[in-house]
Length: 145
Image (tube, rainbow, N blue to C red):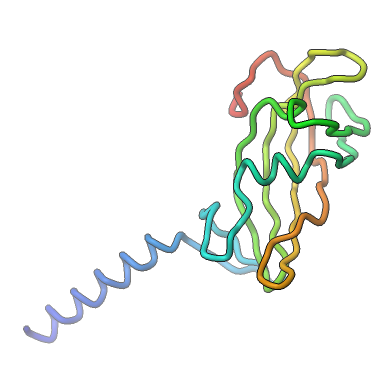
């Protein structure tokens, strides 16, 4: 193999490794943005996030501000992970959910943008808190509407 061929093979292998591991960038606070929602450190998935949010309270601003309590898994009709940010022992997940009002306007749907934070303890991710970023009434179960 010529020097150019070896270089191209090495470059191709490096590109495969980067694509396989997800893209990541770092900010000045030590957090890394990544497109991966799962990694080798048992990053919480959608089912785990939904389970962890049950029993939590959050204040949400936006078109329908107020305190929200997630009293049961059924309150979260649908959800998706938008992105994750991680530093050594904190994981922030940008999570969009369709919530069902089970208190005041029973059955009304709301699209909530949240930030779910986990802390790594003994190699496991433990739920720390949820912050509401915005919420608005919707007619759709689709988190992308």
